[in-house]
Image (cartoon, rainbow over all chains, first blue to last red; front, side, top):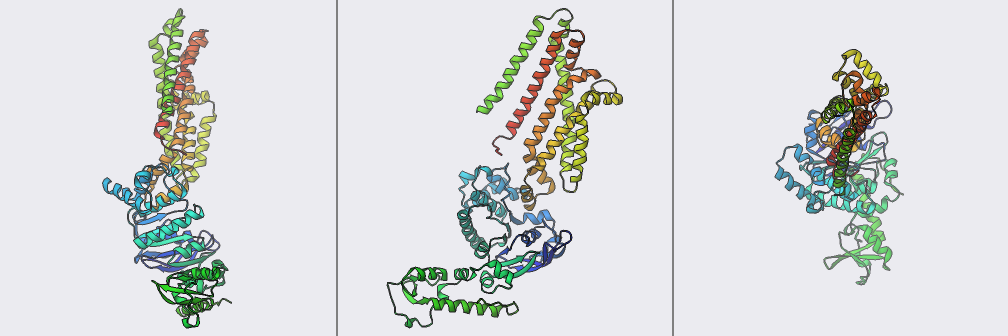
Length: 334
Length: 240
């Protein structure tokens, strides 16, 4: 668990880089710090491993103030993936991945075994890639090595600063998928920085939206942020497409029409599984002739979804979320 | 393969050239020339020359590399400009003047020549140390720190290996220039191949003069090759 308490960073006069950030990242979750540049995202990230010291306030890992830890020891226990990867260009892939285990003085055989295990984990065939140099890898492969290196000593906490920033969109999407797969498997406490709201919504269990001047505008799950932006800034940052994005986060099961009998059953019409996203349902509605899409669970029909039932589901979701954070400013979408 | 072949061609060519020069010096030597150009005497002059260059370059490395490292540490960056300024002075004052100044302190002999050559070779080493360390990608250094390397580990495991090609290029420049400059050491009585050149000039013995000049040039080429080979071997497999 990572906890920020009023963490503030000032570089000289003027607005602070980070302004009294208070939030808690539960263990095993991914918290994405997202916002425009100048929002203090990277500053907040680097406070965790003390590459940046707060001007005031503090950061705790599992209840211990990081300021009380020896920075070198602290950092060896935290995985770190940085912008532009930062692989050591004079060392091969294996030596890069082995950096922290070697600093920790692991036995050679244990290090070698761990390197192979990690390369496999990130999808790089060890026999092929172990002795490649970073400049012999593609951008996507470098990112994978960067992630493997960060995971090398099995740290419970992982810091990732724009980890997928330096690759093309296709590779980026694939790396994001792999990150989600790894995270489901490993359940690390992750703090990830990005300026890309789509990436944030995709990867984060929770989003911290930071505005210029280092102010936290909203902290919540992707669904909360989309359904109820806490401020005009967040609404603007999330963008006009937020309603469409919400469809990605709700399942067909949540939008089954209350009276399935109202629709004539048409076995030829499009059908989806109950866990399909409403975005898939919407696509089926738009491309098919039918006004409804059947929901079929393992061969047996459960009901229908229509445009009206989707609208109702979105409203319901919005109301449910406003009940959760009744203290947050409410701005209903028109 | 091609590179290792090229590494071997140069020393072979240098050895042949050395044999030709010595043979030419001996073949037509007459009168007093015979004694000055005897193989043993030539070897002695070369030994003196090599000693002057080796000691002065080594001392320059010992002084300039740590100074360059210090000047690139956070908090000490302000040192870089004055240090480079001082080294620039050492470089821009004519060597003969540096030797004269050193002469007034340490008198005649080997030590004086070494001091002069040392002052003269500080700049290339210092400048390239600062440039090499300054050229290391800050993201790489931060990755090293962020993963838990101590400042010393960052320096030894990341910064110096990455700065090494540039640093070595500075040492190579200093060493090669030193071979030429060391020909002036004869003016403070430190011997070396410069002695053949001055003796040849003073006595109008062209054969002696040319022999000294040719051997100095061959030695410079040999030093350049040697340090080039070190660079090739220590940065093998690395591409920038």
